[in-house]
Each structure stands twice: as C-alpha cells, then as structure tokens.
Image 1 (tube, rainbow, N blue to C red):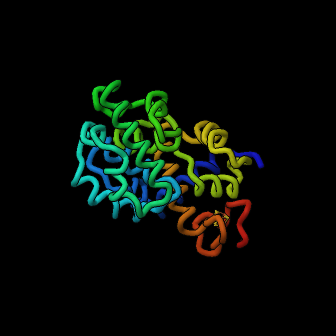
Image 2: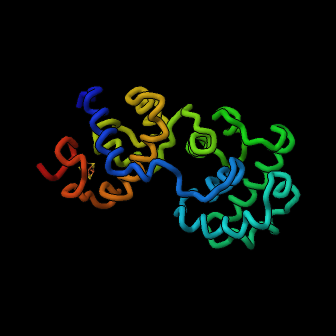
Image 3: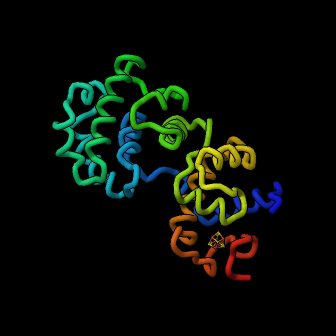
Length: 213
Ligand code: SF4
C-alpha cells in the first residue's frame, strides 16, 4: 500500500481528537531522573504497577547520588513486586553511578548519551527526552506501536528500529512524541494485539485492516 501525506494527516487528526488526553506518559515522575527510573522499571510491566512502586521509592530516594550509594539488595524490597526486578534494580544503580561520574548527575538530553546507560535502549531514551525535556529526536516504538503501524499499513516490519525510521519519515518532527502516545492509546483501546475492535475505532473507514466497511 502507498502511504500518502493525506492519509497520515488524517490518521493524526482523528487520533488527536479521540485521544487528546493521552498525549503524555502515565508514569509518575517529578523530574527527568525519576522518569528515567520509572521507564527502566516499566519494561514488560504496566504503568499502574510502576506507579505503585515509585510512590514509595521516590519518597525514600531522591537524587542519582542517593541511588549511587545503594547496593542492589537495599533497592530490591521497594521493587520486588515487578518482573525482572533484580536486573532492573542493578541497572538503575549502575545508571545512577554513571550519571554522577560522567554527567554531573544530570540526565542527558540526547539519545546517543542516554543509551550509554545500563538498561536504557532507544525506546526508553525516546520516552525520557520527549516527556522530560520536550525534545523530539526520535519516536518511542513499543509493542502497541508495532501492532498499530502494521495494521494501518504504515510499516511492514516487527523491528522497532526499522519502524521508528519509517515513522520519522512519515510524520513531521514536531509530532513524533504525540504520534507515539496516540498509537499507544489506540493500541490499548481498540487495536489490541489479540483483538481488533474495528467497529468502535475512529479509523475504521480508512484502515486497510479494518473488518468494518
Ligand atoms: S480499524 Fe481495526 S485494525 Fe484498523 S486501526 Fe482500527 S482497530 Fe486496528
């Protein structure tokens, strides 16, 4: 399918109208460091679960220096209800030590610098710089985005890096973060990996995978 500018404009405009309140992260945070910690914890976990954990964690420890002084076993009691907590805990502490040693305790503002931190891949880096700093350097592609972009005919790949490159070509830079949030909202609401609820989808008359015409 040939993807035209009018098709992508229409997708963006309809999703924006339907999901305007979802154009943000639901991960609780009050500064870039807290968002980085929350995003590392959120891998293969729900935002709600992460917010429950960080409500207590962020009261106990504030700055990267606080975390850098911890041993993993001191962090585990706060995060053990989440999957992969040992790895995530070790990564958070290693990241805090690198931040204090190399970046003056400030969360970097570029993807290239962020992905040098343990536990931080492109998706996490995109989430952090777009939500904490309002910088659109790339687009966070999660499993919802993979499903939705393929069903809409915008991508033909399961590889998040390839999909991200393609989306950056299809959408204007100022919208990259919004597009990611909107695709995630659509993927949670009507276009889930397991079931397509096309009959109540705002894109049902233009989507090539729609079951409703
Ligand atoms: S019409 Fe159906 S397949 Fe297309 S985006 Fe909506 S829910 Fe997904």
